Length: 500
Ligand SMILES: Cc1cc2nc3c(=O)[nH]c(=O)nc-3n(C[C@H](O)[C@H](O)[C@H](O)COP(=O)(O)OP(=O)(O)OC[C@H]3O[C@@H](n4cnc5c(N)ncnc54)[C@H](O)[C@@H]3O)c2cc1C
Image (cartoon, rainbow, N blue to C red; front, side, top):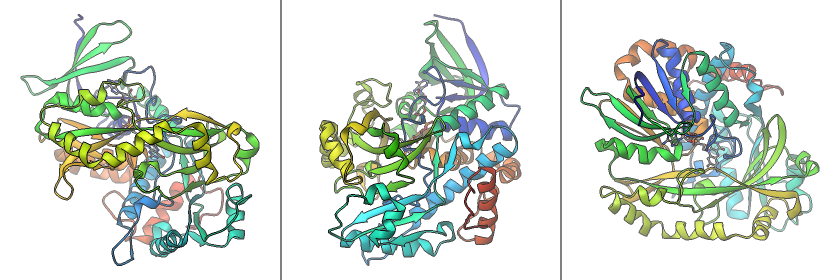
């Protein structure tokens, strides 16, 4: 027992990129509000946001083929790709604001320019890629994208992938130099360092066990202090559940009607990491392939140059798998514990619908290292097993809910902000496109939870994020101006930008 009892304006649960972003936005918009953060682990950015737990792609649909689909008439639907790119532009603008205002340090510590490429083989895939390229090239957000089906040109772009390859079927790639590698772990830590200077109270090794509403309309959190073993009670007017995979169980504890009939489907991940500096040096880019039939979109294989700890690294994966844990540091009872009377039918329906996916994920878990190297050889034909080690990536918990389009128990691959009707509690569920779109998603939290303040906040939001509320695709001149300025601030314009 303990008598620690506090009252505050805002509590952020979890010290990942989402809480870091929301806290940073709020400190600019309402600096007088008191904010407390509770995090189970010893530091910020240790779960999915950690640099080794995600792929570090600044998702802006420059290379991810699953963001564009082929319609029945053979044309390409680029709506999702454009939306994701627009959302990433909001992140770039907010990060630039923080750098320009000296609120965070050197952008090179969290973002680096890197070409984004898509690579496919076979007639059908090459035709899809070409059509995708033609459709995207018409949009100003994708200016500078190149297409090639000439193996010699591809050798220039991706020598490691083309050397030793017998080209027996059509092969093609697109390349755009304007891509980024983002170290979300580093960015999260930088944002929390900044929040500390703004008197945000950071409580590490504090695990939130329960959330309930008090009679005077506040939220009371039961928190276990893992340093002392004591239980504390903290109250707030507004609570953000940014606990990553741990968000669903906490949302369920609030008992709000919006938390009902929602389930979670955990997907684990593994990366192969190259330990041979000579191989690492031969590659420069993030190269995304096409998902195998039956594979979930988040398991699209890619070969990525990464910048981790200011060193170049080369990662391949992620290999998706099944684990009942909701967090990498979670428990094997997480999945079963999330099944409640109000979501059991939704979960069972998803279980029946997603049998093929579950089977695929279990097969992936059973893959031997040799089989993984075989998959790697589809990218690097002469890859040697001894050059690669395995690291366990973060967990993603995909949302399961009943939808009009998909019916009962439909698996969602995006992110969802779930909030109470009075806007006093909000949770972020799902993990895709993820950290790259944190600013867009946290703006959505503000819009849903603080509608009465939005008018007063709008001019500050526009100062920080000039394109807030507008479509950059429809305003190419404004986009070019904003893009050139964020490229400059974030140190992304080493090469002459196509927008200059
Ligand atoms: C394999 C993989 C690859 C990915 N690749 C990309 C990519 O290339 N680009 C991209 O943009 N995104 C990517 N993502 C998604 C991205 O990593 C996540 O969307 C993002 O990190 C989620 O941030 P978060 O703050 O919500 O969660 P997290 O970073 O997981 O933070 C949640 C925090 O809450 C804490 N917590 C949980 N429960 C409690 C509790 N009860 N009490 C107190 N604290 C608690 C956890 O310890 C954790 O620190 C990837 C994810 C995975 C798993």
